[in-house]
Structure formats: C-alpha cells, structure tokens
Image (cartoon, rainbow, N blue to C red; front, side, top):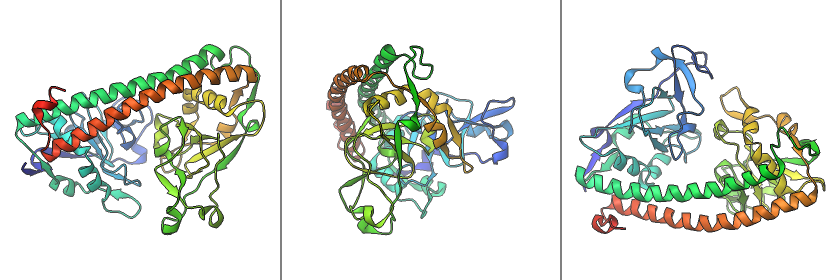
Length: 403
C-alpha cells in the first residue's frame, strides 16, 4: 500500500486566534461560535463550550464543513494531542488556535477512511510523542508531511464501510449501557423527586455537614520510584465509570510517606473539580479500593450515619445540571468548581430504610450493566482488530463485508 503525505490528500486548516477581549460566552449579533479542544469527543460537540467571536476574525475556509476532521494540536496532556472528531454536517462556526481542521479532498480520499486512520494507534502514538516539555504540540508542517497508507478510492470506500459498521455496533452497545445507567437516575427521581427542589420535603443538610474532604496531588514525575507500584492514582481520564477499582496510572507506597499524597478510603465519592471536561460533564464515581487522586479531583468521605455513600453518589448524579450551573472559569480559562459552592449544596437525607431500598435496586441495575459492558468490550475489541487489519493491508474485505 503506497504512502501519501497528508497535505497531498487533504487541506490543513489552522484554528483561529483571538484575544480574551474578543471572546464572549453568550451569542451576540455579528459573532460566530468557536469550539475548543474540549469539544473533540467521540463525536464533535458543536453545541457545548463555545466562545463567540466577531465574524471578521474567521476566514471563509475556517468555517466547519461536513466531513472536516477537527484535531487537537496542543495540550498539556499527550493523550489529547492528535485526538480528533469528524463533523457530521456543515456548521456555521469554527475552531480555536489549539485545534486544526483536516479537510479531505474527496477526489483523492474517502473522509471516513482518513478519519479512522487518524484514530489508529499508529497515528496517536506519533502525535502523543510531539514536542514540548509541559505543553505538547503538533506542528502543522509536520502533520502535513505525515504519510498516510492510501489504497485506491474503491478500496478506501470498502474499508470505510466495514469500519463504519463495526463502529456503529460499538456505539449502539455503548448507548445501551448509557441507557441502563440512566435508568438508575429515573428510579431515583421516581422514589425521591428532584433533589434540588425537594418537592417531597425530605430532611436536607448542607454537604459540608455530611462529608469530609480529601485533596489529591501529583508526585514528582522526575522520581521514577514514585511511579512503580500498585496503588491506583486516579486522574480525570479514569473517571468514566461509576465504580472505581483501578486506574491507568499507579504509584508506589513510598509516596504516602515522602510526599503529601494521601490514600482515599473505600466508598468515598470522587468528583472532578477542575478541567475542561467540566464544560459539559461533572464526572463522579465511588471508590471500591484504597487509592489516590490527583489535584483535579476531590474525595468526599461520609462522616455521619444519616446517609450512605451509594445514596450520596445517586443524589449528586441526579443534581448534574445543578452542578454544571455552579461551575466557574479560572483566570487561565480552565473550568472549576469552587469548594464553598459544592459544600454548600443542600443534600436530601431520607430514612436509611428508603436509602437501602434504592441501593438494592441500583445493585440489580449494575449487574445488568456489567453484562452489557462485557458485550461492549467484545464489540470494542472487534473494532480495534478490524482497524489494525484495515491499515496493515490484512483485512479480507469479502469476509468482512459478510459479517
């Protein structure tokens, strides 16, 4: 399979630059929305976290078109650099300077084929190794020269069709899992009503009276001994499941004696309080193992007998929209939750018997979710295997299209 430089099959569109004074958090006349790297998820989230800037700041070719692939070009996290999402339709808006657009030439490449290649470990490993000690960057000139394996258009279409089918199966399974998780929220509302307005008049207490708070930290990256161990060290990238047993990174026991990092007790509620994820989501989880956390997370440990950790997690999860409403923006643009606002939240406290009844229902639903997660893992593994074969020239298109 021949290798072709990216800029021979696609236009690289730089993101727009603008001053803080040029941006507005609300729509205004003669302004257009601009998305940032936080909008690059499994889909391109064009309706969240926009900054509105004067129209004249945006060139015509910087308006997002259907099939544009928007890529994160600069971040403090190497795992985010190179992350991309494909626009499903034209959108009258643009993207910021920390992003670039890859606009495929449809006479030379199939957009979905190019998008899936840019999601492969081959490309992500290259982009994650980009220059920068603290802030990782992909240079537009280097991206333009990156070589893409490019079979004939008809073969690209076939490969894209196979991957799109596998990707949709994967997404459908993930959606079912999300619906099962949402079911727990529905049961909560049915039993207790809206925890913010508390229409059923349950006793309530400020969160500060119910929990103690533990903070996290990042041990020195220059000390390799700190990072060779078995104790989970949770950062926001791990906060994707309601129960935490493990994490991507781990630390050694010595960090708890040589640094200010503390172990978090079992059944503590973790909440992300800083980061761009807060533009659209406030991640929450309960700890099922003694672990540690970084500085972007707080741990809430129940300190009284009137509320159970599982129930507190459900209350906070049901208050998600309200949690989003108390998020503020730090001076450098990062989203954050002020602890005074968080600890001032009124938490409903039904009887222990009512809490236990709800927790029993949640356990049943989690068992159902575990089964769905196992199926989702199978689809995920299948998709990744197909991706690897597709771009190594090993995919049997005749067999793949009949599966």
